[in-house]
Image (cartoon, rainbow, N blue to C red; front, side, top):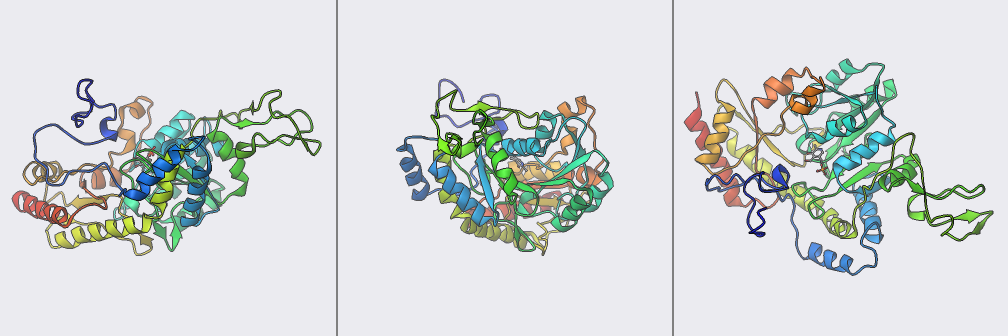
Length: 437
Ligand SMILES: Cc1ncc(COP(=O)(O)O)c(C=O)c1O
């Protein structure tokens, strides 16, 4: 944002600190009919009132609102525990520490995802090992995971791409056979299901994102860790908040997190202020973090959880409307819905047959001549310069040659109007007619 005009719309990444995380505005003068929106949810009076109410509180972080949000989120996703965090990346980093992953360990991961998944491994010096994707769902392929397991493999990090869950049964089977963890990245998958089970309830832990463009959002940033493992409640709470605990002065009961002021000596409460009201330790050699969520975000989250079903229905309607509108266009493929899954359409991914269309040309005409803004999700992670410098490679022909060369993502969110949906369909039809080889 320029210093002079604080209210100006962002133009390029150079001027905006948010860069690609806050918009795909290009400032090139193209008049858009349907832009790629960076607001993935719907807010109304519920969220506005929730913000105002939370602002009146004594503490603005990690209070009652966070607790209620966690409880409601856990209930909605059929899990025993949920822990609000500052975002999905920090939540996944915390889980990487929780699993005690370290240098020399390997994690099997999809190349078709945001950089966040690899970053949290690299931060702990863990090696990402890329397994190729399924050509219909674009999710990690369990058969490819099985080929990558070695004695160093400690976990599988799956991503429910676009809001459709991975084929979790064979993935869990591989994990149980080799005694390794499964982390579900549910950044796209609020309320998504696999054989009736909710995202975040199948693996050892799940992590959600509430970034602005996600299916629900807590004022632009936020995240949630889910798990059914009772033994992880204390370590997760501790790693989220500096790994603070009580001084162990002999006979005290060591308490973490929300009870950290409680100090019991010989069955009696003692002065909490000595020697200090908290002590700090590492967790298996990993240092704690400030990955907390504030009360205003949580208050909005409480209102948003109540809307997940309604928001999902709108996304499903919109995606199926586009699927239906483009079904007869030669060489253009809409979204495949796996009958085992309840897809929540965080993204709408169109794929083009390369013998019929040039994908980049298609995006260009769709954007410049029909005013519909599409983007690419995702460049295979191991292509990024930072990873290449480390010598990290991947061999995933489906992700590289089949998917990344043919895909494009269309605007998808619950506020799309009928006019916008019709503009998207007309744009695809018009572009296809113009470019068909
Ligand atoms: C698949 C995936 N994982 C993780 C993230 C990171 O989420 P956050 O921005 O909440 O850290 C994103 C964000 O776009 C994502 O798409």
